[in-house]
Structure formats: C-alpha cells, structure tokens
Length: 125
Image 1 (tube, rainbow, N blue to C red):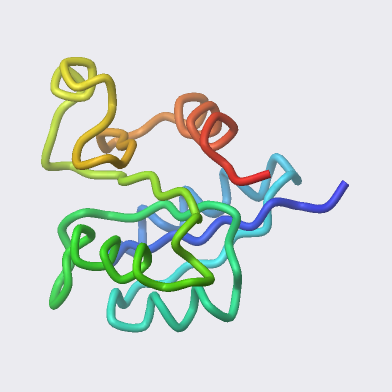
Image 2 (cartoon, helix red, strand yellow; image 1 turned 180 degrees about the horizontal axis):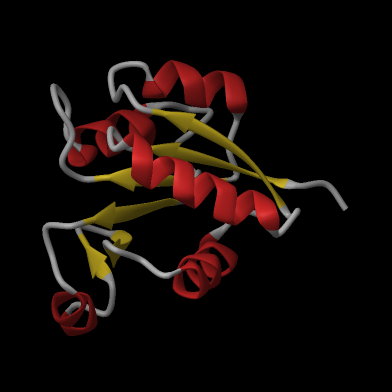
C-alpha cells in the first residue's frame, strides 16, 4: 500500500515539525511542509497531496484566501483541506460540527488521535 501524501501549510515551524513527525511515525503518510503561503500552491502542484492541513492565520495570505486559490485550480480543487487553527477553541468546533465555510477544521493544539481520525475521514482515496 502506498503512503498517502499530506501537505502541511503553516508558518509555525515548531508546530509543523511536531505534526510532521507524528504523522510520519505511523508510516502511513508522506508529509511535505510549506511555511510560506505564497509558495503553497506551487508546492501543492508539485507534491500532489491527498489532503492538505492548513493554518488560518498566516502572514501575507490567510488560509481562506489560499483555500480559494486551491478551489480554483483544476489539479487541486478536489483535494480536501482541514484547517488547523488557534483562533477558535474546542467548544466552537463542537458548536459548528467542525465545519466553517465548507471546510472542516480542528482547534489548535490538536492531539494526534483527533488529527489522524480527521485525516482518515477526509482524505482523498
């Protein structure tokens, strides 16, 4: 079975390193990290992820703007996106069933079990 590809787009290096290591430990995922939202579309075109984990608040371009670019791109518009954000707490996630603006999201800090469960539920086959 081939590894599923996950692209993490987040400007917080410490957070992305922890998430990357956690996911790679399962040996089920190949993980690529992009810290610059302005380069994220080019990275995604080259990497061709099965799912994207994306921060909401980033410098220069926020996750919502970047999601719009992904949705407009013919190679990426069907790639699931899970937002990982610190701007909402766990109570808000539960109040909205984890969906805002048509995209699923998890509140930071996210635990590994919840993240892997969300990935498994939303990943492109």
